[in-house]
Each structure stands twice: as C-alpha cells, then as structure tokens.
Image (cartoon, rainbow, N blue to C red; front, side, top):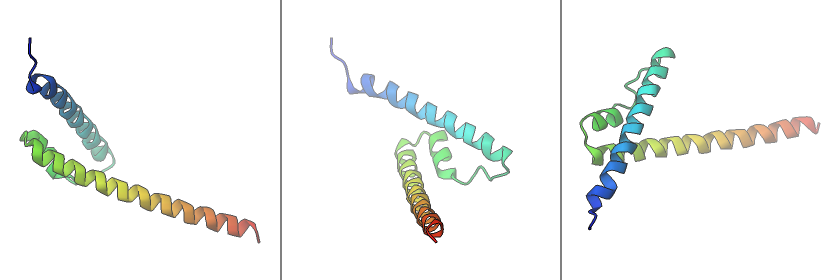
Amino acid sequence: MSVSMYDVSIPIFTLSLNNLAAILDKAATHADAKKVDSKTLPAVRESIEQKDWKLADEQIVRVGKVLENAGEAIQGATGELDRAVTAAGSH
C-alpha cells in the first residue's frame, strides 16, 4: 500500500491552518474587548479566508519577524533598565 505526500501532509496543514484561524478569531475577540482595530493584520486573515496558503505563509512570516523585532527591542529595553537600576543602587 502506497501513501502519497498529499495524504500525509494536507491533513496536518489543514489542522494547523484551522488552529491558526481559531487563534486569530480569539485575537480579534480580545482586540474588540480592548478597543483595538481587529483589521491591524488584515492580510493574514484574508489570505486564510481565501485559502491562499502561499500568501498566508508569507504574511505569517512577516508578522513573525515583526514580533521577533519587538521581542528584541523589549529585551534591549529590559537590559537598559537593569543597568540603570544597578547604577542607581550603587550610588
């Protein structure tokens, strides 16, 4: 019995994308509660709704890079705060 790549991969991709869609729905609910515009990342949601998986992947990578950059900025700010607190405590 042979197994195709489609049979092995598509169900997993579909599950992952459905999970991402559910996460985005939760994020939209949270954004509504916090009065944040839920269309801040429209390309991700629209590409998933249109089942344009290539565009969805590209947009998710872009969002990931933005989040990585934000994380790095937060880490840098945390380091600066730690140094300032240490310097203030040594006086």
